Image 1 (cartoon, rainbow, N blue to C red):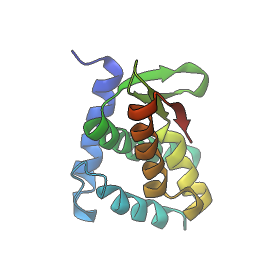
Image 2 (tube, rainbow, N blue to C red):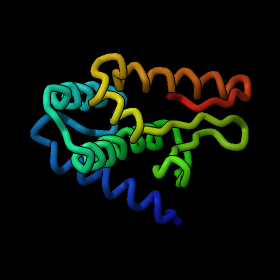
Image 3 (cartoon, rainbow, N blue to C red):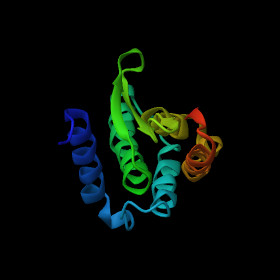
Image 4 (tube, rainbow, N blue to C red):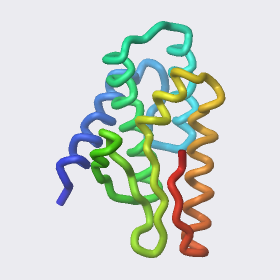
Length: 140
């Protein structure tokens, strides 16, 4: 049975896919994150108010979360102190956490230094290390 937070993230990711299908093939593959990153790069050129930034972070972040969960597993939790969800992969054998909403915000504000495919590669490497060694980390 899905948790409420999982339902919301899945629904939001599906909305992202439906709303931006004209921009690329958002099929929940790791490769599709390159197209998402290109879209975020375009947004870097504009002044975005906080409400729009929150909306984009939620939609694009939910898609990133679902790429991670569908390819590597994990459970969603709400982190009250950060007012956003986290995906935790590998519990209890290992624990790799990501905060995708923060990463999307950083990508829009900071540009290429917060490249989404690079970030996600770090997540994949940490998951592989976790499977082999019991590694625990939060990818930022």
